[in-house]
Length: 427
Ligand code: S3P
Image (cartoon, rainbow, N blue to C red; front, side, top):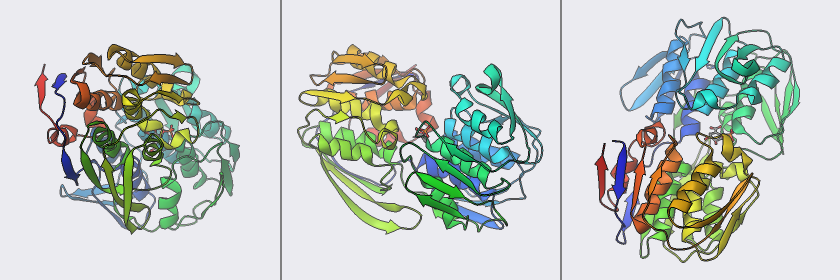
């Protein structure tokens, strides 16, 4: 399955209850189970390549995992040295959080990933970790995986990060839990906060005051997690865009995390004129609920704030921008350049192929809404680029190649898509 041909969709009215589970929360749930005394229970874990790699790594690190295909139960035996190379696949979250977890563990660990992950910057975690005593190295002086980690004693820190990154923050919080004294981490803009919420729920001494998080080292093991992972808003968002741009359509996306640091893309879509309503259904570690989207006429928007809250959804949002009336601008989004692909370049190239006028900036792009044309777009191995242009195909028809990557985050994407239109696969 390396090429898909998507036909334009007729109006649809759907209720979707099987959006992929949240990737960020799934990664964290298996990693944090390593810090608990007793058995953690995880329901609705994301069974996609990225998160299954994290589960396998946790097993390689000595955790006892029971998995009946529905519920995953994890009992930690403490982190043990592994004779396996720990392969995070395509996942930056996996690699960066494991760096924090392993920096203080007893033993030597080698962490690697696929060819895309091996070219992504790791200095953002290896530098602050080294500054507190971690013994971690890799190609380009510790910037590129494979990374080698020898567990060491970590000193307390007061670290001010220049980037709003939940991966860096989470890595340093995990390191801080094993440091020799209380630590402080300050970020320039609030990034997603699942780590803080989940670890607090497990009894860790973590306080958040605005942009600063104070973490006290763990005196004892934490309480096990008991979590049902909600649906992933960044996966749900593809279908929110679909319902917005296919005239006469309506969709309900069930059981999505409504954590404010995760639904900013829906808010940006609302600012474009989208018809979206939210219904809160539960609130344990996270607020969770249903999102209803009805098609609407969209207009251009400027997106330049709270970028880390919608960074993953910008490729899909760019499809909505291409279908909107007028001009849209994305700024302050340089981080897009170091995601699974250079997403500024891949969005710009893809939209231009579809006949849309786009200007490329170092930190974003300007899109002039127009009529999408059917084109052939290559994903560059990036799941979100592949799915975004497939959604564009619901409007204009589209051929998208290099599709395997979709399995990293949303294995049942096509099952849902086929409720909206016909798709044809070829090699
Ligand atoms: C993630 C944080 C974000 C996001 C990624 C998942 C996480 O990355 O893009 O898909 O789970 O912490 P950054 O923290 O590097 O911005």
